[in-house]
Image 1 (cartoon, chains in turn green, orange):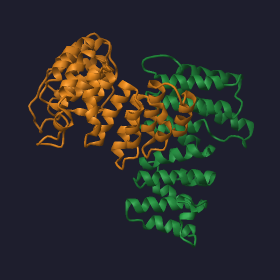
Image 2 (spheres, chains in turn yellow, purple):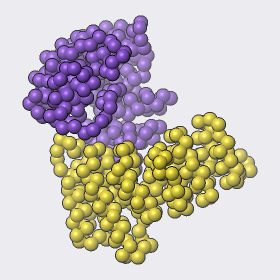
Image 3 (cartoon, rainbow over the protein chains, first blue to last red):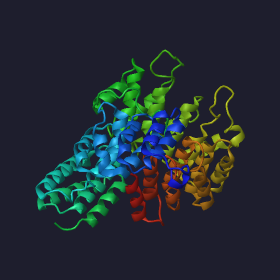
Image 4 (cartoon, rainbow over the protein chains, first blue to last red):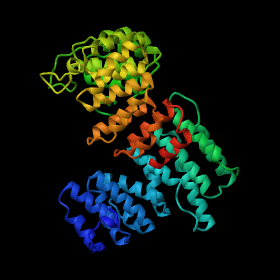
Amino acid sequence: MSAAAMPMSCPTTAELIAAVQRADSSQGLLLATQALAACPDPAAASTLVEVLGFNNPGAAVAAVDGLIGLGPGAVDALLQLDPENYGARAWAVRALAGIGDVRGLELLVDALGTDVAASVRRAAAKGLGALRLGDLEPARQAAIQARCLDALLAATADGEWVVRYAVAVGLEGLAKASPLDPAAHGALKAGLQRLQVVSAENPPVVQLRAQLALDHLSPP
Amino acid sequence: MADADASPPQAGEPISEQEALGRLRQTSDPSQQYYGAWWLGRMRSQHPEAVPLLQGALRLRRPRDTGAGVEENAVARNAARALGKLAPAALCAIPDLLDTLEDPDDGLREAAARALGELQAPEAVAALCRRLSSGPEVAGGQRGDSPRLVEPCEALLEALGDIGVATPEVLAVVEPFTTHSRPIIRSAAARTLLQLSGDARWSAVLVELLDHPQLQVRRAALMDLGAAGWRPALEPIGRTLAENSLKLMALRGLVEQGKGDPGIPQLLACMDSLL
């Protein structure tokens, strides 16, 4: 909800949180979540994370948007999520992939390698190519890059085309974000070349995306 | 739209091709046959025994027995679906599928029609048209005993589009279904006419259905625009209220089936944003 659509006196974060907790219908929860998600206050994060577990896809989409908008301020709340709550975890992967904070690394690696839903693996693959490494010292940067690269290369063999497509996007993002050492660059390129292979099991759209990534790849 | 129940009844442990062939070959447990048939299609088995076994399974008929784990004719239905995925080896099974298109079970006719479409069998065009020729009021009328239609119209229409024989006779059979009372059938008819004629007025029907209040209809229109590869629909597909997974499938269709503008870089950029 835009600020213009809110009542004259702008509600406080606490009021917006209370409205989410008070919502007693699917539509009510959606509207209250949208209002809270538009609020740039990190105090909203834990309530938005709670909404991810409510089994209400519309509200979860709004909550993910709000969490991505909060950026690094939302990461702690996302990582405190109960790992047994599968539905909430799937949405959290999308939020962490969108935020790009390195604290989400382990969850993204685990999701890409093991999640049963292709939609979650696909979000994780894109996220692993979009972590923000700029402020880290070089050794830590290289270690995280290596983890991302290993996870993405393993997923070039994923059985779902849409995940392999996202892996091509992730590998391209990883190469663009910061320079890789020659060995890593070679391995990344070989991974993209595997995704470019013409075969009955590998649809043209994946081949085309891998080709585009290879075209964008700068020399090591 | 895809089959409603094309996945196995119980996923179970991964099995080998030999195991799948064995499950289909035995006759004491229909649920194992059902799984074996599904497996051979899903894995696109090229084993020389796969098509003959599936042809045999296509003839299996069962009385309705709600106590059994597998419902009426489910094994034959899965056999038809699997044959649709096994071109070119399954082209020899087209006559069997044409026979199945005359079965009294409309669910089986539906599976046979989809398989004939996937095999792009021009031999099937006359039979598909004959099933539809009584039009939206009769072939497309609702049955007295269930919400289902007299004929599996969606599958019959889409098979004609996939086969791609664009004669005036075929177009004349399909066109009346663009005014069917059910939006899913209108979507299927518009998709087929768009595939056969490339005429933009049919794309307008599909784009309008992307705004339909029912999610199920929006999903169908997405899949149908994808199947037709209608690239000018990129922008409306992007803003449709539906899961990104379905939009990605539709956009894959635009990339792979379509031509012209918007071009591949724009299509891929939109797909990237939906991951």
